[in-house]
Length: 197
Length: 197
DNA sequence: GTCATTCTGGACTATAAAGTCTAGAATTAC
DNA sequence: GTAATTCTAGACTTTATAGTCCAGAATGAC
Image 1 (cartoon, chains in turn green, yellow, cyan, red):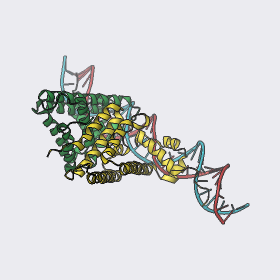
Image 2 (cartoon, chains in turn cyan, green, purple, red):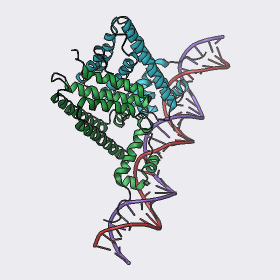
Image 3 (cartoon, chains in turn cyan, blue, green, purple):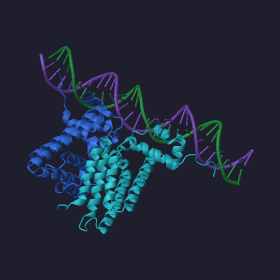
Image 4 (tube, chains in turn brown, green, cyan, yellow):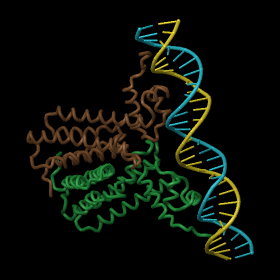
């Protein structure tokens, strides 16, 4: 070993992630990344590879961070349906400042070249993970008799994935807290009614 | 007047729109646009201005086309709630081939520079229009006693906007018809239950 | 025919951005 | 001190692509 790194790669990655999140891949220049991350060009290339590699690392980091938080919250909260409520109303409150950025992975999906299989696979994998987290929570809800065993948990999990994506997209356009709360309230109504076939 | 245009500007615009829709703004090169639209560089610049102007025209065209279709369908169908069902299940079926492109305006929102006020305003305006169309349909639903006068129509309209955006985002990632149908079915359940406060 | 306009096709320019390279200073282990 | 590594700072190259320009042919109104 010789001279150690002077910056924390994880913090730098988090900074990069935030910039990609705010601006999108194309609108984020290396110049801006260097400035935001507080490191020079060379360090960036040495540590993370090229811009695309950094972007992929940022996507993975985002995925792990957000999924970790959600999973933790859903595991710890006693009432599962309340957990989902917290999730959705949380989204509705995250409207100020930084948070009207939608979802980094959602953006990544929509701005990616359709032929870009690497990003596509990362995103699909993420969707599976989120669905799995939701499914696990919903299974506990059945066990705790919050939900009926007759409910289609897979469908519910997917419904929430879709709702969250939609809310985040809307939040990026119009950070109107009240509208988002209304939407959250309606979405949560799926817990309280029989689903028609 | 001298020599008239040999191509139909609207058809050309539709072609351009489709390409932007599939690839996104940044991934769509002038080269590709010229080829897809079937016209030469000069004609393109003469008729539409620069790339960005063409893009904005494409966004507006998309908005008018899709909103027109939706409004027409919702006006013509006797049962309004059935109209919404048709809308959502329609999205679920549009998974093959061309249609796994999500929503052009949604993509535009997520890939735009946050400082880009022109696109932002166009998108906000569109959201208002869609909400208005939905609201109008829902008002008719109340008049026809499909819905109760106590229902919060504005909230319902927004809920469907969000759901549709979410479904389209999901469709772009994973064109799984069955999943989308499940989501549609759950979303439509909001018509059949009292909403908690 | 003349004039105005549009067409094609390609050459050309301008620009922005990614990525590479260089040189020298700083830091740590030995 | 020496060797290994990382740092900064900036010059440089490369590449992609948007945008401009030009020449000549085609078309239609008059």
